[in-house]
Length: 269
Image 1: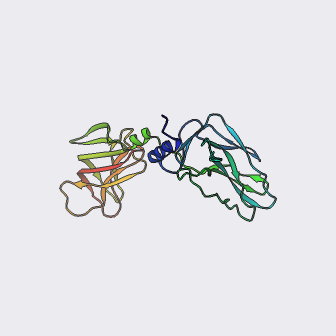
Image 2 (image 1 turned 90 degrees about the vertical axis):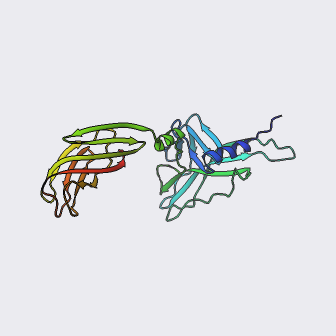
Image 3 (image 1 turned 90 degrees about the horizontal axis):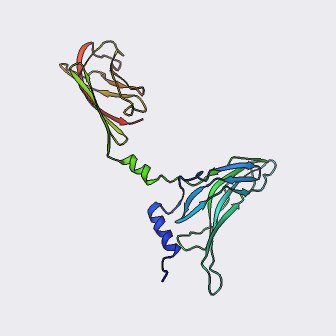
């Protein structure tokens, strides 16, 4: 006989994605927009609200009250969840509709109070804020989503994958520079690359980072310098454009031709 309830599914979904409320990356992602001073349009999409999956298959308009001259206000547009628990034989049928919780006009746009209740705790009448609308006098502001967008498992998996997405090796004179990208991290190994530097900020171009391996921001990495003693302000300088330099980083740098070796890693752009 039927024995799996929506509450069972709700707990399972909440256990998988979280107990809060989230927008899924489908359709128009429920993006709210202002149609006129009294109408907010919710785009298509899907959301998980305390374990319940709610779909919006066509844009839906929600009416809000006009603002007040010389005062500010904030309203919440909520998902209003109800479950029929009335009478001796309740149907237990669930439904959702849009509901506006209107704030109190004043000198600041204070958020309205939200009645306590939780669908996961068995509540039969629960309002969950989905987006906010602010009013400054008679001017209605652009509505804003209040719940976060859920990252798909496929995207999350790619971001932490240990798959090696590429390996490139470049020969430079008697040495080499090699790149390996593991997920979103680039590992670079430079060995015995010869360069001539002089002056506080003297630089020599020694190579270019291939596309797909370049950093978001400049990278500076101290190097092991062959046949030198002492601590010198010199090393590898990688720019977001991919240009790789051996450089003196100010102060007392090297002056002459040397062989440089180092290992560095950075987030890929």
